[in-house]
Length: 113
Length: 114
Image (tube, rainbow over all chains, first blue to last red; front, side, top):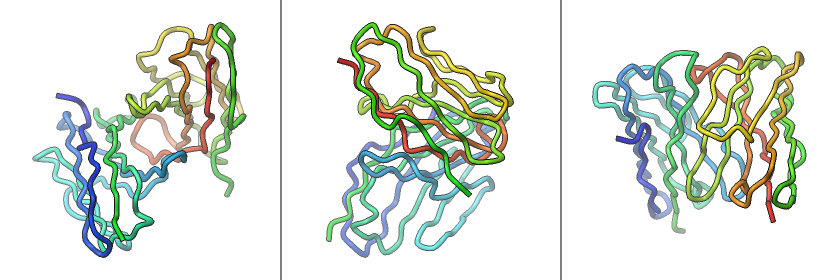
């Protein structure tokens, strides 16, 4: 199993809909989880981090973490064409400061006006 | 607070040459991680420096090296460039080492090897 997996997409949703992006990871001891957004030709920018099981909301974005099932997801409510980008999931797999973040290959989201 | 800066932003080199890229982290951040991003491979971890020490290294050949200075600025060097080294090189800074703290990315250096 790859360490951090994401569906590459493209995921197409109509404007105003909820976009759901998923990420699974391989190591049960993982403690830190991050979602980044990357526009074409630009560098990744942080959307949010999540460390505990459950939901974390920030504006139109909600991160959901389920450590037992080893997945983390990102929901984007009221999707806008400006949300069209690649979304990267990153996980600190070993749960320590001695291992680097591991990134998934990203899911490309397209919001259709 | 100023963000992560990288210089140069664009670079064109020929095979066999070497290149040095620079990264200045966010003030107060002591960890700098370097990544290579290509369309097919996504973000690949190169190495991480914390307090001038390399803490982690990715699966790249020895042609890729780096260092960190006492002011936390970091450089990476690629010697004997190959066509396959063409990529976007990103650095990211964080307060602490490893992947526990949030990493903030610079704008990247786009390297083209001809």
